[in-house]
Length: 312
Image (cartoon, rainbow, N blue to C red; front, side, top):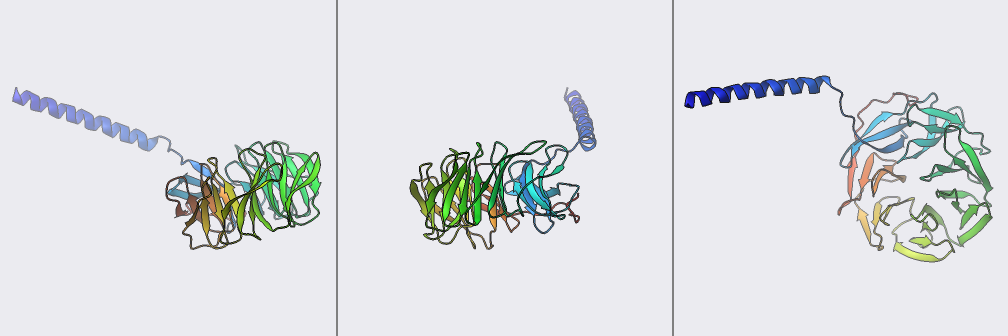
């Protein structure tokens, strides 16, 4: 009986090994699982749009989006799959890569491309510093509206209805089909972002070094005090904010509590990625993940060599 049990165990073990070997061979021959994509950013050093692949804490700069024309600069809808770019031929173009990558020259009145903002509904606001255009993304991008600011435009935000808020000189101006309306004035507005309601905006008052909420009626509520002039604001779905300062990063809770995030860097801006509070720190190769109790910064290695012109 004991001998039979031993023989049976040996047969079962051999069978298990054969099955395991078959599974391993099948796995090796089968398709590889691709990494999830957190978003897309413009890589200044490569002059190309690149994917950020992986998950927060284990992400990397991935492959470039291959395009028929080389880019000088681009504003990327970082949590989507499109961008507005300036090509090396001097053309302002709409770029999309949901499927086959496309580059469509825009018939725009802009002299250059200095600002861009995206909404979740496919509205894109672009500016050359004085003229503002709103486009509707699609196979054939459509010009929705055009506005002219009375002072230099330094920041833009657009909501799902195509409504635009611009920092123009010392004023926050709302542009719509009803014309231009000054929401607030008398200070230096460094950065703006629409709140989740699509009506109020959060703005960085550089003169008073404050993060403030400006309601649809122009009412002002101070959210937090800042140590320096802000260069970018990212509004999260939970009502919190990520803020880039010239030499540091901040996390601001929905209740206004400010937490400094250790960063030996000079952030040029923030690109919101997939997730509640995840962003690419523009001007660096850092990923900021503030979705947990302790914000984390991780450096993004580059997995793919990049050729000139943004091709894979």
